[in-house]
Length: 147
Ligand code: FES
Image (cartoon, rainbow, N blue to C red):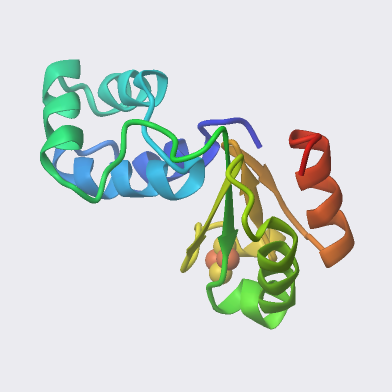
């Protein structure tokens, strides 16, 4: 999956309606950990909105972050499909591995909308499906050598 695939899926699902901006921003932040200018412009183009409006909404709500909280971000889906396929064990392993690590922010979401490839983690916006504890730890190590 590409960097914007989940965002594109969400916009397609809502037929690129401008009134779904907040939901699209929310999905973008879930999948990438934060909203950078690249994704904001991508959303503006997709929803045919002025970039200033997308930026304005993204900066108005405190739940949106325009900067990464750490050098890298790892998002673990703990929604039902991912949970059934072992997301909790992956979550636990990553929490143990990344405790006190300032380089990676670890966050959790309740369904990224790609349940067919559960369990999912997203590292720096890159979706990794069908994860195991071992593959999740390996993916983290490959992204962040000091982790
Ligand atoms: S529950 Fe994880 S992608 Fe849907």
